[in-house]
Every structure is written in C-alpha cells, then in structure tokens.
Amino acid sequence: MAIAILYFASVREAIGHSSETVAPPPDVVTIADLIGWLAARGGGYAVAFANPGQIRAAIGDDFAEPGTPIAGAREIALFPPVTGG
Amino acid sequence: MSATLSVGVQAADFDVGAELAKLEPLGGGGVASFTGVVRGGNGLTALELEHHPGITETMIRRIAEQAAGRWPLLGVTAIHRHGRLAPGDRIVLVAAASPHRSAALEATAFLIDWLKTRAPFWKKEYFADGTSRWVEARAADDEAAKRWIEQG
Image (cartoon, chains in turn purple, orange):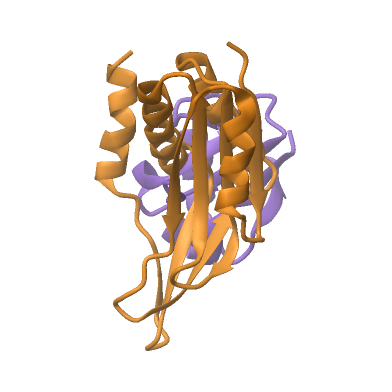
C-alpha cells in the first residue's frame, strides 16, 4: 500500500524534505502507528516526531485523529498544530 | 437564507474596502469584519506563512459554509495570504453580511477563531538578529474556538 506523505512547517524542516511515498507494513493501522513507524527511522524523523502528541494529521482534506485508520489513504499530511489567522 | 461565499488563498495583498463593498449590496443591512495584520516589534523583520496548498481552500470554504449554516448570513468572505510578509502587512480578512448585527458580529468572531485553529497554515518569524522560529499554537486560541462548540 503506497501512501504519499506530506510534511509541513517544523516537521518538514526536521525531516529535511516535504514529501515522500511510503509503504508501511500491515501492522501500521492508524495515524499514531504511522507516526511511530516513521519516528523509528531515527535522525530527523525522530526529531520531528519526538512529541507525537503535538503532531496533527490530515488524510486527504479531512483532519484525522491519532486513532484514525489509514487504510485506503492516498495522501496523508503530518504537521504541528496550525498557527494561521 | 442563502449566503454568497467568497474564499481566497493567495500570496497577493487584498483590498479590504473593495472586499467589504462587495458584501454591502447583498441586502443584509450590516457587514462585520476582522482584519489580521503582521504584528511588529521584538525585532521581527518578516513572517513566513506556509500552508498545505492541496487542501487549504477546501478547509476555509468549509468554515465559511459552517458560519453560513449557523447564522442568517447573506455573504461570507474569507481571504488568507501565504508567503513572506512584513510587519504591518495584512494576513487575513474575514467578513460577514447579515440583516442582524449580532449574527454578522458573531459569525465574524467564529470565522477567525476557527481559521486560527482549523486552517492549515503555519507561521515562522524572522528577526533582525538573524534568528527565526516557528510560532507555537496558543492554548488561548483553542479555548476561543471551543466556545463555539460549547454554545452548540
């Protein structure tokens, strides 16, 4: 299952690029699993996801919770809490 | 009541007077608005606004639709800029037209509270001494947004 992952703001800077395509193993079921799986790569990923509770996500154009399943997702964005307005 | 929605995500500045003038002839009798401007001071030289280009406009349109579904509005405008801005530059405009001033004013507060907490933008501050930092989300903004949920 190939998923396009987009990174924004401080998450993007820590990881060093703004997007990539990943194929997580079957035991990566939820957004929280995905964040944990990416963090385990170490380096910038570990820095970006050091505090998973501060990471927000969107699957396509819907915001997702940590427990939201990623099955069927084509594009997932991971980012810190928004600060617009 | 059917509202005319006008949503924009753009690098360019916007003309507040012209945008409000578009809402005035809708027959509502009242137009309320909020303009967000880059705050200067503390050596701030620039503010960079990053966004999620694939979904930003959809997210803002949804917020505008929610406002229109919640208050008797004839028009809603929400424009948010991205890119590099200087102190004093406009960032965001939200406005609402309604026959009732309370609806226009409340909808305007709702629009900016929800934009701050639900639109995918991130601010980075650049300072005269060469440092920069990402703006952190404020709990006060979450609290401000939450009151619209508690009110039903």
